[in-house]
Length: 574
Image 1 (tube, one colour):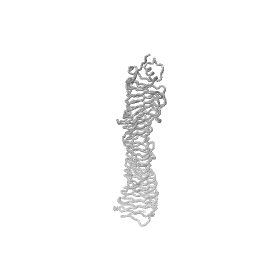
Image 2 (cartoon, one colour):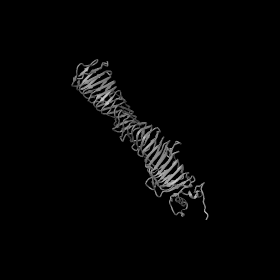
Image 3 (cartoon, rainbow, N blue to C red):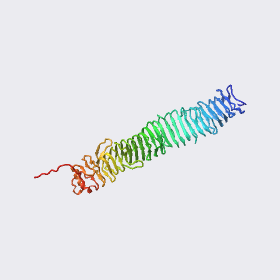
Image 4 (spheres, rainbow, N blue to C red):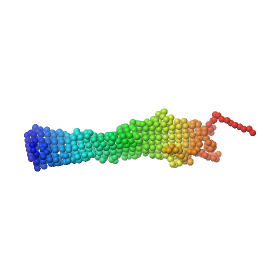
């Protein structure tokens, strides 16, 4: 069928054409072609030769193949599949309805003003920017665009949605849209979905923004060059593909789990439930405030882990890293830490259970600071913090530092007006506790399963101190038990013992010293050994033979005993 007209083309009855059909009206009047009878049947190709300003409408009860066409608008209703056999250049709206049928418009030179699509599996290629109007697709939707991709209506896609706009932006922000899954290629990409969101393999060179009313998951690798923002308030977010990479992550959701195969940067995020981050052995850092209501688990392998936003808050931390620094507003609790170097900072207290730590430093304004480490470690001067301290001068909390192996104090500890508990308590005779820096507290209690040694730089700035050698301390039960039988107390020359210092071991009476290291309290057996320690040649009976004052006593024989200001001397005559 070939029809040529100088004006509009319409119909008043059904057209059934077994061969090809051509409708032409190129008189320059932009007249419309309207073939809308529902009983039309065009079994061959359909060609429209019309002015660029014409509106074209066609209904076909069978499959429809559209040949090269230039028009102002195109409205197609088909009972079968819709395909193209040439370039379609539509400056205005294109509406194609083929319910339950496929739509394939894959000529790479085609352009459309906007596209409203109803069909099963739909595939469209456009050489220019693509605007998707209200569409319902029961199968898959594939859009390949040479420009930006946007929406101007709700998209309801039951199957996979694949949008490829390499180097161009994709913005599908209608709040009523739903997708089966989303595979996206573009520059800056923003998607809003009224249901759960599943992200397939995607490559985004710029930013990725997902706003979802349901949970957000991945079904493939996500490669995002810029900021990834996912907002799913009250819903779970699970991005666990081990090959995914993100520029940075800003997350809002309930329970969140993200795996990344590169350095992980956590931007400002609000998570009401748990948070699990795995950087596949790469560094983890923050660039904004993290507010996490549940347990936060971060695995950086042996890489650096730095969360230094002072406004962040966590319920509980379980972290693995090499060099670890964490700062939190309020109090900081870390029930499981595996790290080499650990630095923690908070406002109102710190509580840590750790393993493998070699160097530790912590700072809190007030509250208590407590660390129990499985293994020996040292209190150290580190990159951000120096030793362990309460910074409020009126603080009355307790600093408790416990090692289940040797403990070395190489940097200051300051409990202000509070108390200090140090313990090196494991299962071997090497559970020594060495102090080689200043400790400050109203009171200090120091346990060692083996020996206690005060090194050259040791300063005990305390009102009362008790040193318990050969005494284990259980951090759970807070009960002491017998340690090594070969335990020693060692004091390097020049180190001063403050007043009210007592040295004892489990089951032994304490030896008391004043500020000049003079004995103020001792049992008879201890006093015998105290003097015998000066001259081993006269030692006969030993009950405290492991007091080693390392050169101190021979230089201070004149002031070994503290003077008494009162008392009586009695003599008898015979």
